[in-house]
Length: 145
Image (cartoon, rainbow, N blue to C red; front, side, top):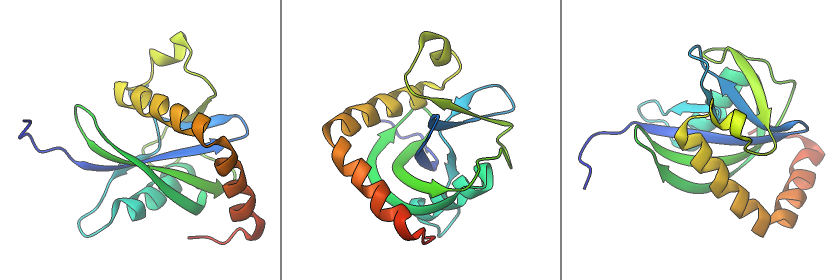
């Protein structure tokens, strides 16, 4: 059993026209948007806040997908539907997109990001129709959460 403390991280999966949104760190690593939850903040609240801080996108809906424990964090992974024009802010120096995990891109992704994206891909394949309908319903009125 691992007794080492791991930060509570909110991790966001946001699908845009160009693919799933990734944030580049100052070290050149590509991660899913997100970050640590502040004291007293739920990870859902942290996911929405971190998405806005890193990309300027406004979340309109969020679905909890799964927990993931990586080497350094305890993730709660959320699928967020958001609007706006993504722009790198805060600790994101650039934004990128992925539609599939190419060998070249895997070299710049964190191991946790690769594992989370693979798990999401499996979930999405199984529930593709529900994800599509969710976008239609949530973006109809574009109410911010």
